[in-house]
Image 1 (cartoon, rainbow, N blue to C red):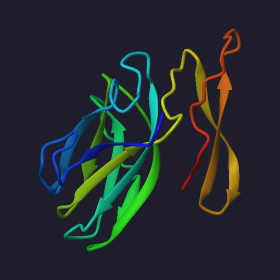
Image 2: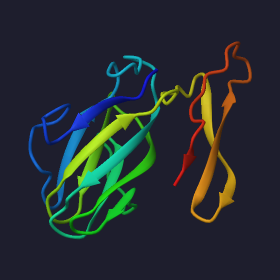
Image 3: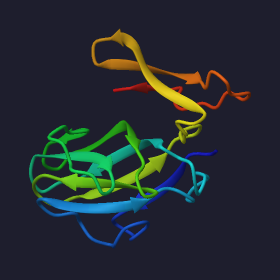
Image 4: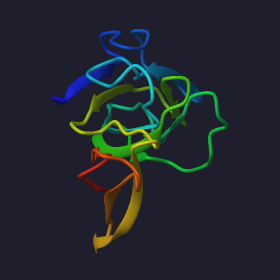
Length: 156
């Protein structure tokens, strides 16, 4: 799978063309898009970028149709552009994005080897390389025949 842009709220790619306002939420279809299988996907690795917020804010990325937790995936000051790598479960083929304050643009790039199915692989945290960088590995299903990669990326 090549890196593929799935969402750009500037152009209307994947979501309506608009800045995402305070307490705004948008859902993005990931299953069947950008090389992600249409079925059987339980998590994806996304590069989420927020740009030019009108106020300091945070973005939470979470499974569609679930209650959002208070955790943030991306913290950003007014006027900045900031990316972060996010591992997020997929529900109903979608993931959701919440913007806390201000209004800004969100871009999402699906990472190579980033779709995994819990029937074939399990993502697990394996430790810290250094402060602020966590490492993830994947485990092949014990009875499975083919190893599928869930994430080969460091997560900041």
